[in-house]
Length: 176
Image 1: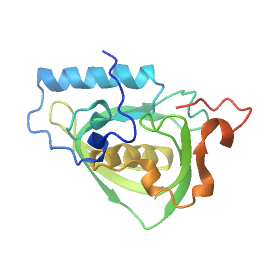
Image 2 (image 1 turned 120 degrees about the vertical axis):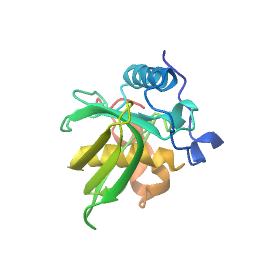
Image 3 (image 1 turned 45 degrees about the horizontal axis):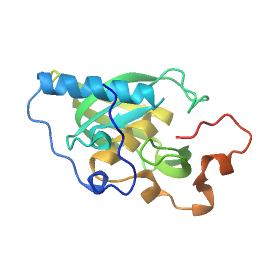
Image 4 (image 1 turned 60 degrees about the vertical axis):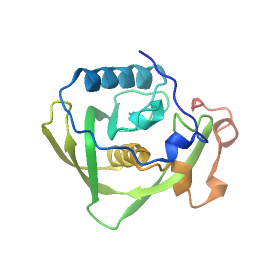
C-alpha cells in the first residue's frame, strides 16, 4: 500500500526512532511492503520508516535506473533494521541530495566517502557491508532520518540549496 510521505515541518520527522525488537513478524513484513510500494511510487532511492509516520529504525534503499538520479552507480535493494554506520575515514564528499520529505528542493550535502554499515534483515540475520560513493550517501541519508535529521540540516553552503526547477532549469531533473 502506498503511504503518505511526511513533509519537512512535521515534528515526527525530528524524533529519534525506536529500535525494532521483534523480527520476522507480520507487522515488519507489512511495513516493508508499504515502504517499498511508497518508495517506488515516488521514484525514491530510499525510504525510512519515520517518513511514513512509523517511529521504528527501519530503512530501505536501492537504485537500478531512477529518473531522479540518472547518473549514479546501481545500489542493491536492501531492507535493514537497526542499522549502525561507522565512517571508514575522515574523507568527505559533497553531492546533491533531494528527499521525498523535502519535495521540490535539492542541496549539496557533505557525507563520509566510505562507510561500514551493519544491521539486521527482516528475519534478524546480520547485514554487514563496506561501501562508498552513492551507496554510502544513500545509507547515510536514510539513517539520518532514524535520528530525526533531514538533509537541509547538513547543508553548509546555502547558495547550493534551492528549488529544483530554479537550480536546474530546462533539465530533466524531476521535482521531488
